[in-house]
Length: 260
Image (cartoon, rainbow, N blue to C red; front, side, top):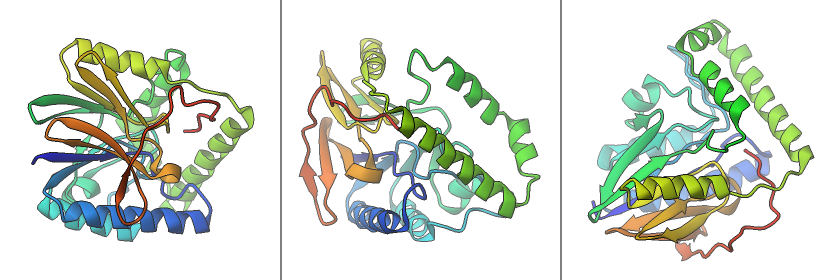
């Protein structure tokens, strides 16, 4: 494959019914475009605002997106690096949908260039509490215990706490800068990678460093941005529903809230 597409932070199920419909329609048209290409696709985490699989039950929403991903994976390699909102990915995504699931990180090669990919949650130097919470949430025993809840209780409960957490962060109005993420990417490039792709920040980025690049596909859930590496050359775009338009983010991004 000469081309790899990257998108992240769709957060399906996070917003109003009107926005969810528009977001899904835009994503569907994007996936249909990728399906026609000779390309690979990487979902850099947080496709869903919440995802949890039971042994015989999965959330009923977003079936159109799941169906398209299944069709896409029949012809293309589709990778999924788990984000902080959807890291309870299990056999349904891999066996039924056909995605290649990566709990932590992923390394690909394109045009002779090595690409390191991870969602990026927990990379903030001040994220000590979250890193502990992440270990608790990903603990296999805790997942088994949560599966004992009936799906009609467990899924709405998790969505409630996800929305409650988001509302709390929005009220704080904290301005966030992605310095820690750029520093992390630079360290990876110094270690031998040519490109580092991170999500999570909700800020699109295409920043050169030495002979490499820090890439962030950005916040699909609001901005519809995505990244492409084509024969070793990176690019950043906005999907307008019909085609990709080149995107040049401003650095620093400015006074935008960091809401994950």
